[in-house]
Amino acid sequence: MKKILYVGLDVHAETIAEAVAEGGRGGEVRSVGTIANRIEAIRKLVKKLREQGEIRACYEAVPAGYCLYWQLTQLEVECEVIAPSLIPVKASERVKTDRRDAEKLARCYRAGELTAVAVPSPEQEALRDLVRAREAAKKDQLKARHRLGKFLLRHGRKPDGMKAWIKQYLEWIKTSVHFEHKALEVTLLHYLHEAVS
Image 1 (cartoon, rainbow, N blue to C red):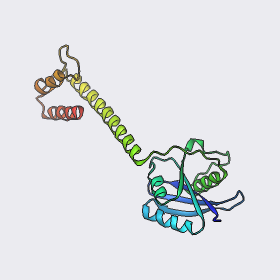
Image 2: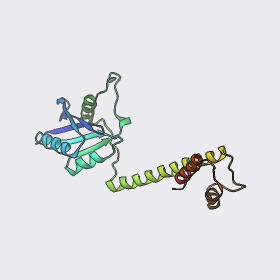
Image 3: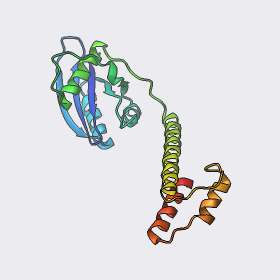
Image 4: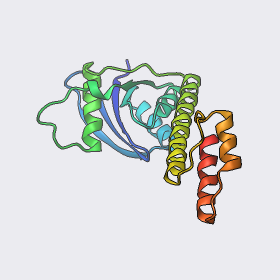
């Protein structure tokens, strides 16, 4: 029977620190090193570790998302993404390094002390990204409209009894608001473009 290797991965945008805890509580926990966060380097690592045993990998949910999870599962590696807030913390663990974090993940994973998060499929994550992008665009547009409104107020330009951001309001800005100074006219066009795009 193949021995099980519990692999802890401390993931960053450019690098991944790896550590291995061998099966059984008394098994060795060792740092394997650091690789580039690139699919070629990940493939090499998986190939090297497979020669030593069956791989079970984990890493903390990070801003980089689930790309590493999808890459590892495509390489037929069992992988879990761990909730960072639920990783046990000891008072003595004050100094954090990538190597230590990877070793801790491997050790805790082997001990069954970690809680995995639900990983979306690439299609689900694509839809989430679309929703995030739309929400961000709406927030940006709202900020741009506030900037334009404040700009107009600073220069005493107010529509008579007209509700902001209806069709007539935009027409009023486009046809009735003009400035003698070229810089102000350019500023108006810039703000207007941001507010309606």
